[in-house]
Image 1 (tube, rainbow, N blue to C red):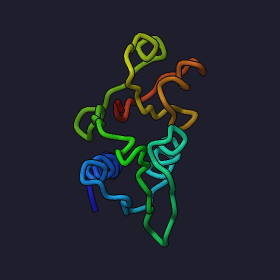
Image 2: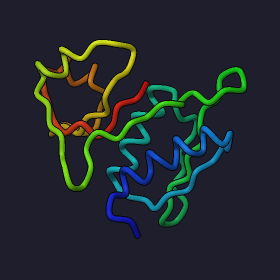
Image 3: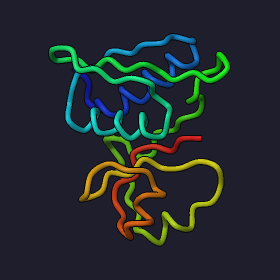
Length: 125
């Protein structure tokens, strides 16, 4: 049992990608599942399966390189970071944020389109 299952999940994915592993198994939770769905839609994960009380995800690879290499946790248990739509819109560059909004977990691009803000979970390059 961890204090921050979301952070644990994202770091496990990053470490698996750096170690060229294909699968990661983490304890199931609704938030972790919704984050994995967003990552699958963005093509960083190739497959998601719920097996009993665990979630098994497969890291996506392109030309034998993992799709996700750089990931940085923004919100942590001791310091939550929130941003409004304007602050998300001002973010420039190739990276995007995973944002937990009242309408569910989505990318910062989707949150800007829907004109909503929320808690920034992580930044993905």
